[in-house]
Length: 155
Image (tube, rainbow, N blue to C red; front, side, top):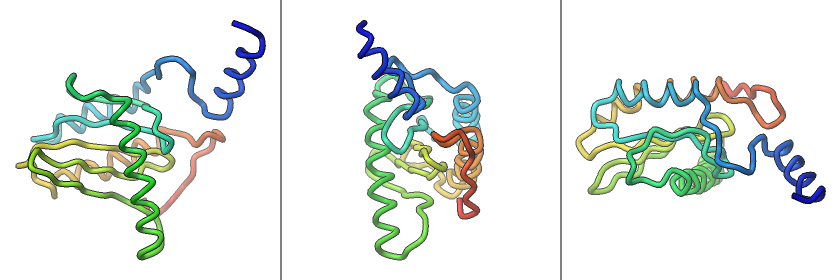
């Protein structure tokens, strides 16, 4: 590796707080995802992604590719934030997408998002009841790229 590539890698790591290699799993966040799956009947899987689409942690079935799903979640988060800001103002909390194969719900978690996948027959009220506090707990465990927690009482 040339000195220039090493310097570029160091700078990217400093600004993004992620390495250029496979993302390391945040054990506390992963434990939160697994506990969420245990508490909600019909939950297929969950993941946490940064707002720029980088995978932080996942508890997904093997047929779902986690890094691609993280990118899709970030896109949905950005679109939903823009839609809420334009239509009604204020911050984004969650979006529910329902299809014949089930539900995809994206929750804001500070600078990241919690995305949960659920079967069609899931109790959506129960899903929200369990996932909203999980998103807040995950936001508490994650720090902003500057290393400080950003408190948002609306989340």
